[in-house]
Length: 228
Image 1 (cartoon, rainbow, N blue to C red):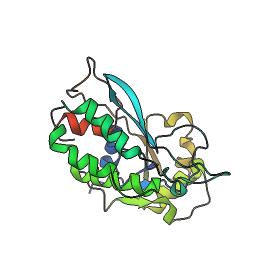
Image 2: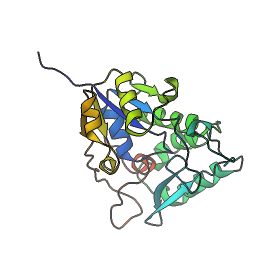
Image 3: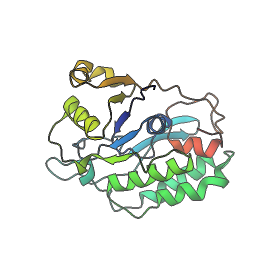
Image 4: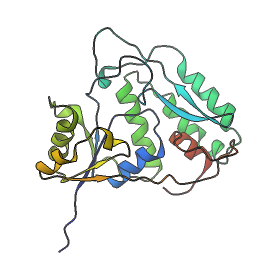
């Protein structure tokens, strides 16, 4: 009987993330939302901003957050109580109204943007789960929240602890992981280590001369009905 590896992928709860994020969910057996790690004190992060095509160029849309003094985690981060949702919707309307599937999918996307939740982690997780359903990606049975475990470890050790806790024997890393992850530590714990090696699909983008990779999943949903 052929042995099947069990793949664990781990990622912070990103704001309307790019296609590679959803590919990671699709290819994993367990997907851990890393919500209890420290939020970056300065500048924007993928937890509150993402790139879309604005006048044919990759530019950020941002949901402003509150920044308390001291240190805080992603699941303790909240959005500012200002009208950023309407601003983002107007930006999408201005730049995607001529996209092939804008009219068909705008209510779906706009409802996600208008989701009445100010906690960044909960807000992003709602969008991720609903978009997975739209893309026919199984998510509910594989979804794990890191804060449910209350691990005190960090860095590679935390990823190892989470992989083992989910019952997986293989950790799948993203493309940039080679800069900071020590594969030998996973091997010492009896875990396999693999790379995602995501290849970005090409599809017709409505308002660009050349294809722009790495944009929000919103760009994909407004421009194509291709299976993912």
